[in-house]
Length: 310
Image (cartoon, rainbow, N blue to C red):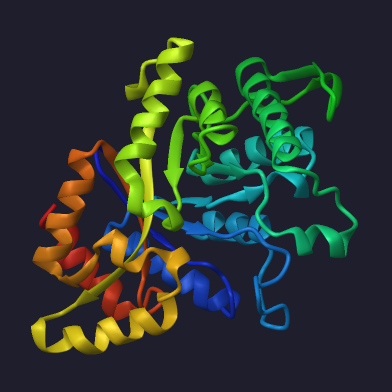
């Protein structure tokens, strides 16, 4: 990763493959570092709306690009057995020439699990399963072999070859700010910690809590890339700002999106200043929802007026 990585989050709700591929190629052409997808079996809150499967889509995008990193914010741990996921990840790392970012979370929507007959359980149970998966992946990437016995997953002497292209491994991205369960997993296993939009109002507290957890286990917090996802409403000029703000508030006005807390609403100078503030807090990766779902106009504006300035 670069010192400050700028990515674009493109949840695939309502998009055709052609539309997502166009955005991926546009990001690559413009020098945007990464593109991120969601992982849901159907569109949250809109199950009848088209929504492409996350891993298949990432594979196709990485096969059709040359420089762009692609990842998920985040894969649902319950959807894929960790040994299968390890094999999938090493294979996709080869297909992409080492451009996969492996984002993982404990699951966020119970209804998906109920419909598919998958276990949901308590937050503690889901976090325990996620912790086991992270250990499986660490072993697979480090040793090329998995041999673990846990309360949720047991894998006996399974080879994972060829090994991943990236050294020491594809970056493990863990999202969430839960002090009791998630941050201990981040401190012990993650290469990248992603703060979701719903926690933007308390970034410093969450960062300090992670640092405290790292101190408890003796890990240098500087070995973890701090990542934040936020809605960006970027206007070409002051005259365009009211319309841009209106679209952003209509689409991302729910408190869970943290539109106001993120502070990324304005013209390019304001966006650059806010990203500078996030960098000063230690965040090295900024993943942006755009107010208009990554239109050509906004991606061009992001590259030419924000990224160039940074």
